[in-house]
Length: 290
Image 1 (cartoon, one colour):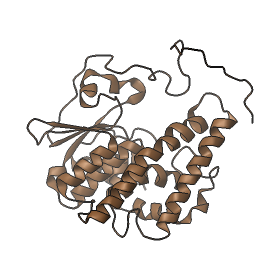
Image 2 (cartoon, one colour; image 1 turned 30 degrees about the horizontal axis):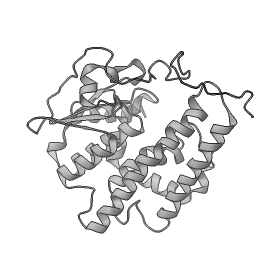
Image 3 (cartoon, one colour; image 1 turned 90 degrees about the vertical axis):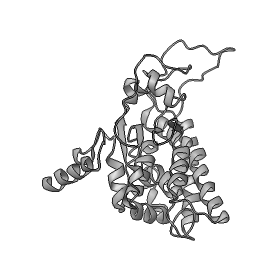
């Protein structure tokens, strides 16, 4: 497939028409709120405002992992933010994250409350707050943060690049698909070579680097992202697949993946989570249906 027309950029770009595609109604070249609405606040120390996209899943997995280790202070309310309906542009959400992207976390256990936005920042904040999934040895800590920031810098090429042009763009053009497919496969090769030498991304231990990378690249090789596993020949990245299957088998990961999910199999959906029993009931219903 080849591009059928050539676009000549104007001297000065102006916003004259929607961008097209699945997210056309919420894409705009300005920031800030579009409407007044306060964020709801539940009973737990941590208030999460999110959706179960890969970036949202990072945080719910982290919280479920902390709870599995017995950290009661990691109890949280997870409020659904429907990004296709513009919930992220409410005055309350913009107050929590001026960038209007999910997830956003508010820690009410501090005085005053602490807002934390950007998924990588949230993982680092929680790791430091609870002393988990981030090594204290300086070299091991640096390696973990290397891979955490690798994910934050690399995933936009997978999501906004490959995912957009391959799965969401209203028209398919060869140049951007080829460009971002090449980069996505290069990134998978980076991970595959790293995982050939160790069981987890940053070394011998499961860390926030794994929690950050799994919802994007793990989901991709497990066939859950963009329906692109065959197109990308993900079976070529055997070490990534093995790692993804290992992470996917963790009970806290299975629980975290369900929170704020409103699509797919009903047994994998939990629109909002306000108590651990919400997930327990979800699991019980899933088991009964089998």
